[in-house]
Image (cartoon, rainbow, N blue to C red; front, side, top):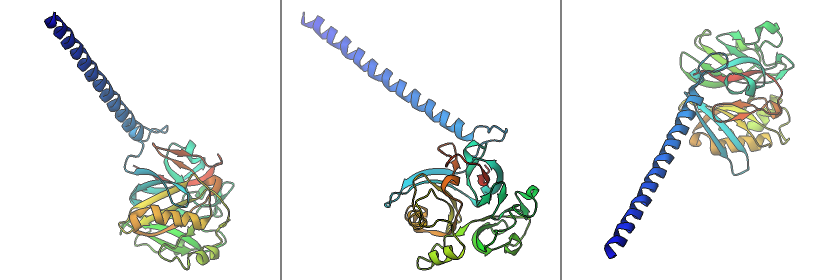
Length: 274
């Protein structure tokens, strides 16, 4: 009698162990499937047939002042200003919105290898100038593989070693490292609506030359946005950057997140290539 009870107990334990093992194997299979799907999604083909970028990282971070920042980190050689005439979320590309615009005309510099990205628009609105005001312009020198912020009215004023190997994106100077004077410089460059609570976008870079494309999903002032970026991005090693167009134009697309602002179209974006 005792022997039969022991056999039944042993059989029950065996079934319990087998059930636990099957559940564990099923969990592992689901986890592996999810990882494969995620990798395929990140590196799959875009609707235009090009391969989606994989050489970037994504992060969503919240600052102590409440700004939620969505950040795409890559190398500047893997970025370029791209004409889209569409909402960034609806393009086949990864990246964020670019500079200022009016209707289909660019009001900010957007140049690749000395060619304005919207040159079919004609001289005005092509992306060859920061309209009306000399403004901060993020410049990548392809020879040096180096980023800088230069104040310019026209792309012809930008200083690079080889004008066939660079890109430039206009915006408003963020003046990283100049906490006392950044606001005066931004006002000099006629930053729009600095005190309003609005969605915000920016491009900043660190001392190692990494570039961070940043879009907020919460609203706030220009000062609060700058404060959030300095706190949460670059491990206290940011070297420079600029504000891009904001509010409804603050848009982002990647494998991990999509932000469409107020659904408006923008003229150009900062595109991650690979």
